Image (cartoon, rainbow, N blue to C red; front, side, top):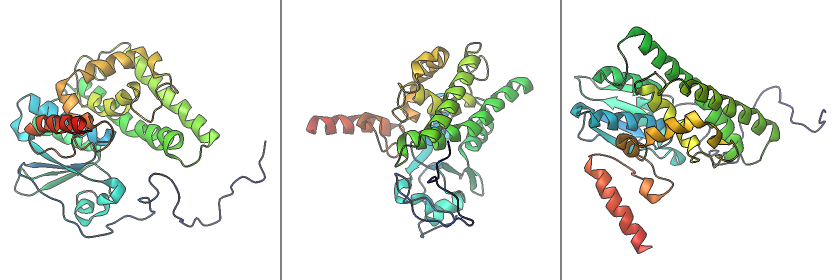
Amino acid sequence: MTDNNAYQPPKVWVWEKGEGTWASINRPIAGATHEKELPVGKHPLQLYSLGTPNGQKVTILLEELLALGETGAEYDAWLIKIGEGDQFGSGFVSANPNSKIPALMDHSGDTPIRVFESGHILLYLAEKFGKFLPTDHAKRTEVMNWLFWLQGSAPYLGGGFGHFYHYAPEKIEYAINRFTMEAKRQLDVLDRHLAENRYFGGDAYTIADMAIWPWYGNLALGKQYGAGEFLEVESYKNVQRWTKEILERPAVQRGRIVNRSFGELHEQLHERHDASDFELRTQDKIGEKEEN
């Protein structure tokens, strides 16, 4: 049925600030809006991020590397408040001209190296330390298949389903139906693969799992968009098995809360500059709960 009152695109689109959670930071141009240098801590690796799924990918890998004794993976994690526009500061734009978290600066060499895009940061660190990425050509290719799958699929889950189901100021039936179908299709893709494989690269835990887990693992746990029941996430048994197995890893438990400034207090560590910050965070949050 045709709705005569339906929206019709103009001949030339003109930007008007919209409504909704992220309207204040969305704009059709790139570049810095203000001067603000990035802080630099004591470690070679400087991460500028927020504890969203894309941010969690990197901090999980860094914590996994440290758990293996890779001292060169020590890092400072600085909080980038995207709701306040920190990603448009001149220093952050220099680190990532796309103004998206996370961004990494590697100061371990003579000249600092910038690394942006979460999937590339995972690959960069895996190659730098020689961990969580197979050297066998066929196995490495399979890991890269799933790493690139995630980078191409997650926008449909986040910017598609998550936006229209959870964040959009008005509920649009067509959009929700379209992206719900896609989210469930993606879950089915993952579930079918995990029916025959322990991890996404096969028998070994790799950066492919670290990339996929923050998005689809959190979704399977019912922690993403309040949509667990709506998407019937419990019905994806193999995804559930994989999700819970990875959640048991101490490095994942640490990495998923770094730069997190929302949610339950015990799941927040705004900045991380030393391993002891996790213990201090626990004590601080317990104190806050007792005071409340």
